[in-house]
Image (cartoon, one colour):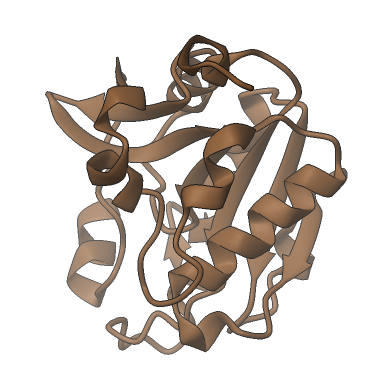
Length: 195
């Protein structure tokens, strides 16, 4: 039987970027992940940071829009045909892929948060707790590390993600102070703040 102390044990770690949603609040001419921030698509900024964090694997869960032209070499794309059913399906798809790649933990983040640097992804990946969450000025945000042992506790449906575990197993949650700007881009006004 696995003890609580063993839940944060190290092994191969995958970054899982959830980038499947429809971006329904974004009313721009293109999907929000393809909207231009500082001369490049939004998703490009996120993937630059994730790749620079140098985790064992990078998994990008896609769905509503084709991101394949923007994915760097070596990234595993996981299409989620059930993306419209909510974030839980994307999270499950990413974790399943990470498991198939032989990973023992995932660090999950969103494709619409361009201000989270590689250092935050790396710091969360290096945390010892089974559930590690980045904090910015004391506020819990992405990314979140999930050891394999907690994967079965994750929601299987709806628009809920890893945050649900903060209440289910608070004894396993560790906070990781990070630098960066965790704001996401949901609207044209949000995009304007980045440009």
